[in-house]
Length: 433
Image (cartoon, rainbow, N blue to C red; front, side, top):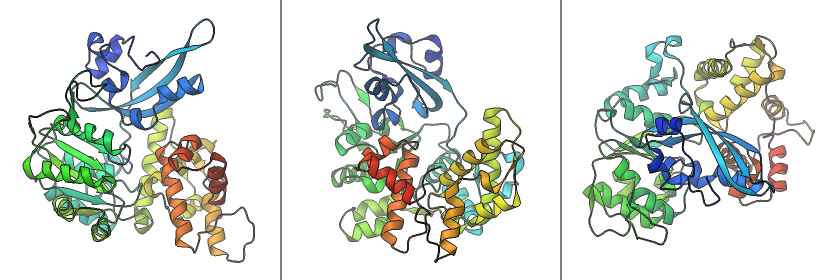
């Protein structure tokens, strides 16, 4: 890519993975071809070219020519001329195994009654959800998934699609919190050539891409009032107008939405349309937080260990009783994602075949000690705050860190705070390794 993100080279392997020919790819910019969420949130290419970092590695999902999601491992490096000036960047990627299964586990290691399309759980409430999902998935009913950040809402949405009659058609995800309203509208509905200055050609929206299949609206509670009205129109009439078009586009899609917000309270406060809430909430799925279903923790630990071992081509270590006790007693404000982060840390620190207590991140054990000992006075330890506002602040910071891959620069920018302030709060809340 050059400095304007125009594709200047596209090899045979890229053609094979994406389905685009070299000629097609070189007519557009990289974000128009790959259409990954990271393109609009934290583009690694722009980050590399602005910072001069030699190489950046990340994992993300792209859409191929047929609008299918493909998990890829990305590696970005800057291109420089003989004077050291940055003139562009090169991005290489290889197809990776899907990582969307935040609470998945290989089926050979768990009895069928404990899973639903790779969702794992033996907790009574999760088991009841499996029964509901078996029935609801095979209908076209709109489903609203509720749950805290990191609880696995994306996995449930994908599992519903996989179990549905639409499983052979596209599953398209839109993160409603990732883009400003003006960009989100064009993502939803697309635009026609000439609709605005940079509209060089027609671009289909996500609803059109999902025709015949499922569209998943993640964090639907973040939609602006204007977009709420336009979404309601699509649900009512099964059609929409792309930007710059006078002709409607007919679509047949099933809508699954999710949020970690209290939509009913937002309706009462006038922040979310009541008619849209009832349309989205034909069937409601609530995912209990991990701290309320501790019987699922050992299953998830097994999966994360085996997954890490598979990637590194090693035998998975076992968990010692003292380490398991700590993991079972932690409160997990970051839910399954936080557990995964802890296990990956322990795997790296483990030099033998057993993960011991001291190989876990410090904040797990210190959190418990400080919580259990109100007389503890060490100022650097994190105690569960009695002030709910402080606990909420910790959850928001943790969620942002997870979202931006624990990048303090991107997290601080997203939270509108100074990087030094973020680091101080991370130490205060024991969100460091």
